[in-house]
Length: 160
Image 1: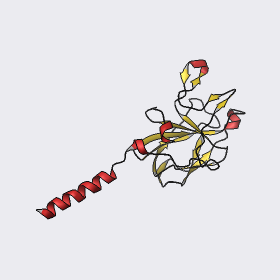
Image 2: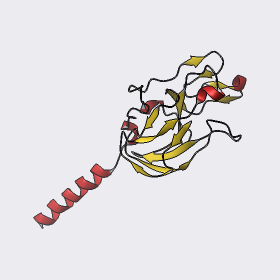
Image 3: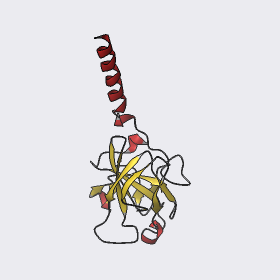
Image 4: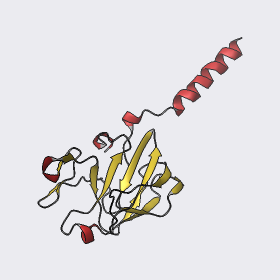
């Protein structure tokens, strides 16, 4: 009987350790050249990179968080992730209309303006997801960045 109780506690401990509390998750470095995940501030012509920033003269809100990343820079997995297919930010095609759906650490999120190496599979933290596309071709003068958007469109800021 004691062995059964001990085994039950051990099994419970293993199960509990596998459950992830997404509220405690922090993104590792997303982009080469920006190990601190510095957030994009405001550009005179293009607005601000924070979640909820005004777009189109107040007609809509920015539904993600922009993390500074140079055109052509390497974009990394912020933690162990599963690649869940293509995600595109625009209806009309342009030079930066690419991205990827990801999940990991109990989160579901998208990275836009990235050309992924692959749209499926898994990556370990720090492995290359892809390359930042040429934002300056579409938005000259903008602070180039990776756009991070949660699948449920909630605010991703707390994970940075």
